[in-house]
Length: 233
Image (cartoon, rainbow, N blue to C red; front, top):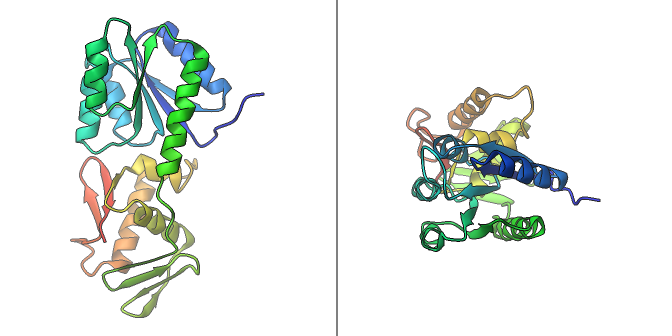
């Protein structure tokens, strides 16, 4: 009976159809959610959303090399763990890839059991490093008590809908890091069919209106153009 990993989403960036089918079937059977891209450019675009827990990245790709994808993701602040797939002769590429921010590598052809073991080990590492959700947080003249579901600004109570409070807590938990709209949709709204990226933007605007001194020039809930949002205390 497979061990389910219902909250783990994996992006496979691989151009060999046989490998895509094999790896997708293998990971899906274990309960992972798997999406795939068959070239470097489209893979980079999807990986840059930050909506995945792990990326399996082939070094040799059309349109953009895997090493370039790895480098650009790290330069853009995307810290998703990356497992690189390399050929036996690509020792130099493995070394460069690890130095550019790759977390592990696996040589082709690989044993399916080893792939699963490496995936599970990397995801365990990520879970151990995840931030502990805060109970109370103070920024500017705002005090948020997430355990009591209370927010006060300048000592006065601020009316907050449940989803607004949940969004604020997620931003606070991941403060100083850019979080994409796709990541927020996945983690806060759990990809509900009724939710779009516009919904995220509207809720962010409501938070700013209630908590920022100057909502049009926010100090704490900042928009990072083309990437998402960053909370700065």
